[in-house]
Amino acid sequence: MSITFNEIPADNLVPMFMSEFDNTRAFKSGAMPWKNLIIGQPTTTAEIKLSQMLSDESGDALYGQGSQLALAIRAARKNNKTVELWVLPIADATGAAKASGKIVVSFVSGTVASTSGYIPLNIAGQSLNVNVTAGDSVTDIHTAISDAITEKANLPVTAAGAETGATLTAKNAGSYGNSLAIESCFFQGESLPTGIIVTITAMSGGGADPSYEDAGINGIIAGQWFNAIGLCSNDSANVSYMKDILDERWKATDQKTGVLFYTLNGSFASYSTAGAALNSQVELFFAMVKSPTPFSEQVAAVVGTVSPIALNDPAVPLTNWVVKGIVAPKVADRLTLEENNELLKKGVALLVADDSGSVWLKRMVTTYKRNSAGASDTSYQQLEKVFTLSYLRWDWNNYLAGKYQHSKLADDGYDYGLGQTVMTPKLGLAEILGRFRDVWLPKGLVQNYDQFKAAVTVQRDSDDNTAMQWLVPADLMDQFLIGKTKFQFS
Image (cartoon, rainbow, N blue to C red; front, side, top):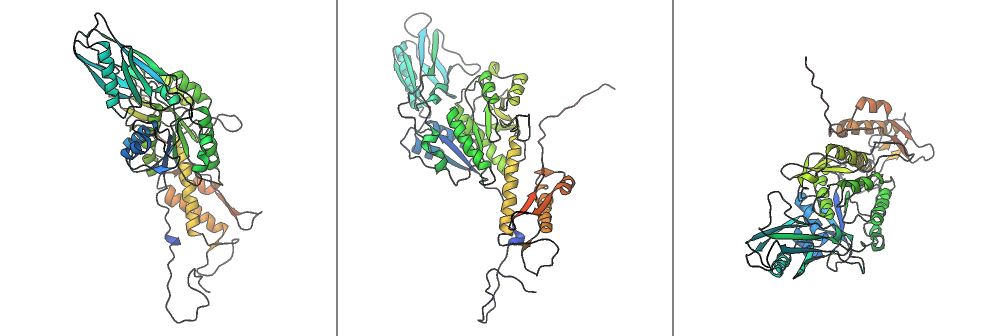
């Protein structure tokens, strides 16, 4: 009975002692690879190529300070600096208009400010205070507003002051600019100097978003595996295009499973309507109603928050984790329990704010609600389930490829020689049971081993004598999201 060697030649006649190493029995998959991708608009003429971001300053230098993409990079890195962050700049659409808005100051009486103080502004989720000195004219104050905005280079707008008001213009063209909030006295306790009135015209007039399909994103990211892709566009054509890409990657022939993250700045009704129309396990559409933080930065912040949690343990509930960098809505604008529940039923993931103004992940549901027959289905409802499935598939394939990359295949019932690597149905069953029991179960990714053992099937493919088939009815770990208790008097 001979031992099979991989490196030592069978026909060598030269005297020597030779030893080779075989690590297949000690194979460990390790941590699943994880990369995030943010797609957004620069203000520079950056080349359309993938780049890894290791600092906020790199984003500013490459894509323009205050650009949509540079701000998204900052938002992602504020929540996580360890998971790989890649970005893809897509330039503003040719000829697209930039949104604009206006801040106009007036006085209750007179032609100059009667008292000194400051005007508290919040623009696109960023606060700035504009000083007012008694005796200032409206032109002086409008100029001061413009100067304050210009000084704050990370704002996504530019400004010009005149007697008729301070006009704000988005740095990027497209619909993104329409979502940039302009607020005065946004936070509780803020007030205007006595005798001053501030009138705001919301940002509007932004043109079309750049086309992801025209930019050839599918070809650019081909061969790269991105686990979470954050979109700085909620244009329906762009979302649909990216969903189609991820649907293909979900299939067994590709297996680069990824999830699309996106949102908008809107009302309860707009989130509800959008969510109801969606249905996919590769889409994560979330709501943070009336937050002044631009949707693109919200997306990047959520991607940054979710990724290290899911990387460490894909089955851990993505609930009650703080998301840094998203400004909470005013208390009066926050949703009720009934409204939050309605959004979740529509497939809209939920973020909430607490009394301190912190924003938290509350429940991360995908937009998947119905199977292909149109029947209600919750199998892919939780994002954690999607991440867990992605991990299990990667781990099992990686395990087989590492341990049996040079294996032969045969039926059961034969005693093969020592050192022979021969896959059989019996061995295949032992391997999947061992992986379930010794790796996935201790990691808390699956449950009900006895049920699994009774149901799992391993057999040779009757139509292909080089293929083995595994039917793996794994019961995925559930998430403890709701506690139901009834207290009774005794």
